[in-house]
Image 1 (tube, rainbow, N blue to C red):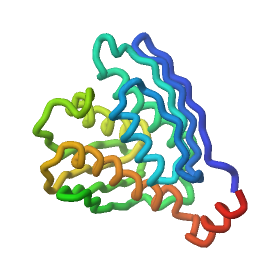
Image 2: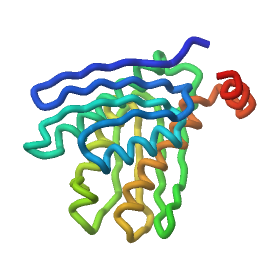
Image 3: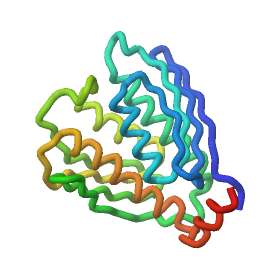
Length: 196
């Protein structure tokens, strides 16, 4: 099986972003966006999906975080779509209920080349660290659009805003792992990791 990897470089007036992904990786990441909380979320996504992710983003943070957040979603979605090629060998559908302490979030995906986002997530605070909480929607919308996936993210309940945000990204990870790597059995994965 050929390696499912991709490199993307996207430069605009607002952002310059380079991204490398390996869908059949081991969850290693090198991420620098200039937004600490976003780095934390993307590292968590990489680690739990086992998708290797290298991302370097320089954006107009002196204006605000919008372009940087949205454009990282665009580039990661494009890179994963490029690495998937014709999307053969994957399972289209999947969902997971992701608990995180008092929080429960459901993430459902259909990797169908029909992009759409349904987002039912509310935050009680405008900021997490220095990140604007309304930008989580923008990241997921950009990711779904550029991956070519229908994505539903619903926070069923929860109080802690950090847990709510993190459960969305962690919920995206296992559906990505299970459905983008569906051809690989657990035994295949263990053997591959032992040989690396």
